[in-house]
Length: 347
Image (cartoon, rainbow, N blue to C red):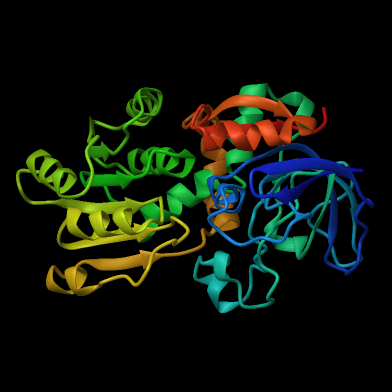
């Protein structure tokens, strides 16, 4: 089968590799219909994170058709159309029961990789996979895009809002204008936030943020950003801040942008030095967040919200590529020509 391979920093390639097989009773073999590139995939592509040359791709988002199941799988069967979350929760450990399946305690292999390929082996598929009604051919391309966001970015944006305790009437600041940040805006709107402040310096992303529910936008950074946010909140600060980047500047701004007693929901993969938490202590700012509870959110509300047309997160995909064009899919995101790259793998 065809699969993307990380050749070296700045270069992805396609190779023919062995098709995966069922190796454990709770494995599921999936024929990928759509995959994509995540902002977190770009850290190694940009040379900012160590990754071995000629290694498996970082892809961890997919929707597809079940091809084969292990002996312990009863929840899905061959032919089912499924969302393959980047997490592999069991559904019954204390973490999963508390709604934190991103930190499932039943196994150590809780995260996907290698999903930019024609087939994937999905471990621990009994509870983690999310079955979608009908077949992929029943849905428009736009709907397939929205369903694909439920493998990661929409659920991750929602996780930021959930752990930040966003509620009706709140003022929310969203750090980051990538796909996760934009989905965080959708989530804040879905949870009833009244004022949502985006932080984009790019016209196309700011426009999409506004379409998703942002009421204001701050284009400056650092101390100037804090001043602007304070001006927009009557010098009080936000009730909640969604940190969807992971850099030192974004994290520092997030801790300073909230009012005393606010919550920072952190879902940006951390790429910071030592974080000074004195700011959060002095303002009673609560820090929360981590890997998203993808399966929990999809099953509880996000899949229905997408199918009912209540939210349309698939708009974060602004260009489509074939699997053979995987390097272009990475490069155009790196160059910020594309918000998020969709990869068509099969019909």
